[in-house]
Every structure is written in C-alpha cells, then in structure tokens.
Amino acid sequence: MKKALLSLALACSISIFSFAAENTEATSNYYVNDSQVENMFATSADISEASPALLAEFDASGTYTAVAKKQKEAVFNVRSSDKNVAVALILNFFLGGLGVHRAYLGTETLTWVGYILTFCGIFGIVPLVDFIVLIVNIDDISEYEDNPKYFMW
Image (cartoon, rainbow, N blue to C red; front, side):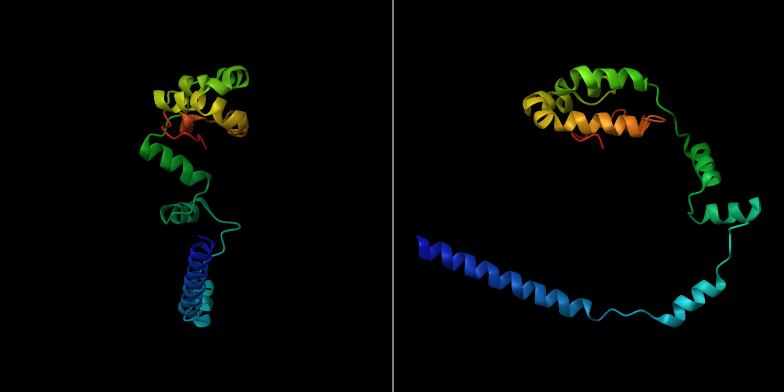
C-alpha cells in the first residue's frame, strides 16, 4: 500500500512539474511593444483640469467618474436600497447566526437556512463578515438585497 501511494505521489509531482515547465515556455513568448505604448501615451489627453465636455467624452468610453456614475444610474434606473441599514445591522448583531438579517434583506430561504445548518454561519464567521460588509457599505446596501449567494459579499 505504501509503494502504491508513493508511486502515485511521484507521478503527480512529475506531471505538476512538467505542466509548470510547459506554462513557463508558453509565457516566455510574450513581449511588450514599446513603440505602441509610447504612441498610446502620446495620443492620450491630460484630464487633470478637464472641462465637463471632456469628462463626458471619457465617461462614454468607460471611465467611471462621478459624472459617469450619475449617467449610469439614469440609464439603467439604479435604485437605492429600500431596506433600513440600521435594522439589518441590529438583526445581524443579535440574530446573525440564524441568518435573520439575510431574510430581512430578501434572500432565498435556503440561504439563511444554510446559516443554521452550518452552525451559525461557519461558527459565526460569516455573520461577522456580513456585519462588517454592512458597516462598510452603509450608504447603499441595495446590492445585498435579494442576493441568492451564501456569502453576501
């Protein structure tokens, strides 16, 4: 039995080393074209003192500034949270191990049942992290409403 395990470990280590060697050879073919990088910097614009028109141009290309965030909210009709953060924090503090705060935020039933079945959310670690996440994102918790994942973050 020991010989079989030793042979298996040896075969695994050989395959891992050969895979690492193949990946090293594949990544050595990458290079940076300095002239393209210099050209990109030469054609870019300085936006440190940008006008609103210039900011709007950069927002359309995917740069997320305050103006772009407002435009995104207007286009996609992003809503702020309907739930009270204080209630979620109090429920998490006192009943977090039972997942009551997740039920308040509107998650699926199996999510907060999972808290109970995993001994109060992996012995209280998950509710503690949820509590910290709620405090950090106290301005807007809408992304945590109706979140079907076990881990809220």
